Image 1 (tube, helix red, strand yellow):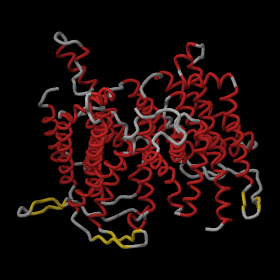
Image 2 (cartoon, each protein chain N blue to C red; image 1 turned 60 degrees about the vertical axis):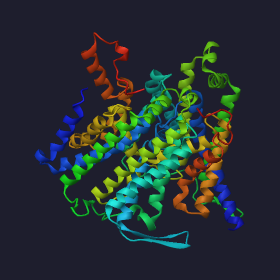
Image 3 (tube, chains in turn red, orange; image 1 turned 30 degrees about the vertical axis):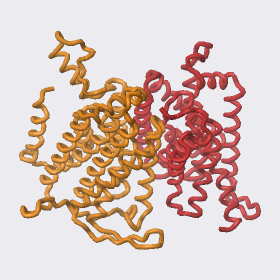
Image 4 (cartoon, helix red, strand yellow; image 1 turned 90 degrees about the horizontal axis):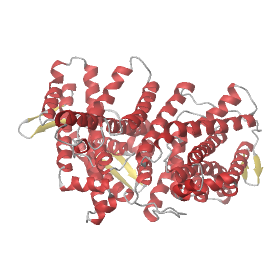
Length: 292
Length: 344
């Protein structure tokens, strides 16, 4: 184990952690406010990647504009899912909505299969292939861009939640739905917006990582599971927890893949879940009681 | 329903190999039967205790791999320290070990994951399934990874002194699977109607209340998980010896989804639910595959799942039971108590 290698791993951690945090924040928002375990989250991630592919490669539009389109598309799809599936079942027990979301997950994933075929697609990016070299670390420009955008989106989400009227209403709904409704918060609108926002963040993560890796119809499965791991780590409904959880997951994966075995990279998140539950079943940053 | 219905259904299915000549259909019935067995085990958790386990395919796969490896033998080096060599054993022992190892995993996972409920439980079970999939994919020395484990011998059954029979034919396999389903049915029926079953139903209805009257909730949940996992492992072992080749695809999440769809469509928390749901979804591909590709089939399954949640949230069997009881006993009973007390 040498220092240079470790530094490179840490740099990779930062870059992956940003997008993981986006995924986690989206999922934790939806769970915290709506009490819905969103199994379609990974599909929205895949949708974002395919959205970027469609707009930038098939339609041939500008790369940066395409990312905006992909995020907007994810938000619209999320809002639709909420309106069609979740709104009629508001107040149903958590298992019922979970089954609905699993059904939606299967439909979305196989629609992607049908629409795009199972061959992986790659998205060209406008960045130079020559990496940026800082001392012992080398980073591709694309990854730096991904990191920057992810951090921007995280800050924007914090601002939205903590500094705006909409965020205020969301936090009120999170604390006590009935009281919020009595104070004049339009709960139905908040739910739709929350789901759209969470879905938009997932689509953003997909659009950002799409050009880094390749785009396949099943890419959403692991994304969903990783998002769950991040959210368990941070405590369901805890945005700061999800942000830190995203970076922790990226770190554990990077170190696990680098020093143990790259085949088990994706297993690290699940091991985290198991360890967290063994030693601290309320999550590392938990505020809310989860048992019962 | 009358007491005779299960007997009539059983006789019907016992007669199938006598008149069914289509080998492909018989094959589908066998694999459907194996999945029904797995769905029945899932129903024990999902239907009777109300815990949605989405990692059930892990137990199925663990049973399949354990049984296959017991029968095939293996030679692995653990942590580069010592070697474990195992000579091939008879497949029946594999079936036994597959069941036991899966039950043991059920115990460990139950102990671990019943510390949490609801959403957390679901996520823990999915994670567990994903870890087992990655292990089966990456521990190439033991499982041959994506290259699959071929040449798994079929089961040999028999008793000392009476002679032995190796299950090469489809008909023989069909009867073995049918026998296991009957066994599982009786086991679940007895469990559910025992003190244990009443405790499970109590804790599904109101966990705090169940605890307050002295039911050790976690203990009962862990027992349910052990039985359920063992049964799923047994189904997996049957699958391995019937298909004779297994690969990490067995841990596919879609397999769990298939089981869940079978249970909720048929009726969770009913004895007949997984059988009805299992038959529908086990045989549906036979009809569907001549018209549409697998993607469309899955899209239809997903849509159906959504429709069932909206239209028939209790599933098919309770709906029929309710209708049956209402037409029979309407003048005597209130409709609210007409649904049999089998479910909570």
